[in-house]
Length: 100
Image 1 (cartoon, rainbow, N blue to C red):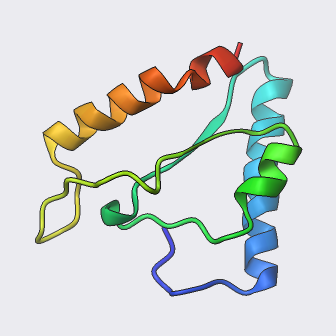
Image 2 (cartoon, rainbow, N blue to C red; image 1 turned 180 degrees about the horizontal axis):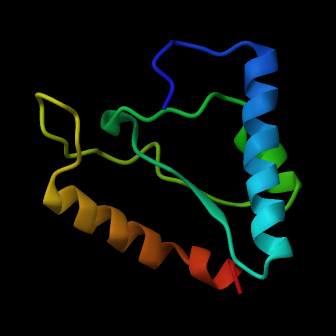
């Protein structure tokens, strides 16, 4: 989770490299890996320019950042209903088909 408004190029590159390394490690062990970008209201943000290179490298991504987030106002944690909505979005996305 990034709390600052932006990351510099070095930090963005490190983030991309770490996510790509996680994907490669999972694949090398016969496991699946997907990056799910949560809605902005949940407090999670992924810097611009990260998803495109990951997709080009074959990392499965699901960008939910444009969806409406239902969180508790005092601490920004997802409500139970929002957890259920996230599960429905992920299940309906077809991302699991890409992981086979």
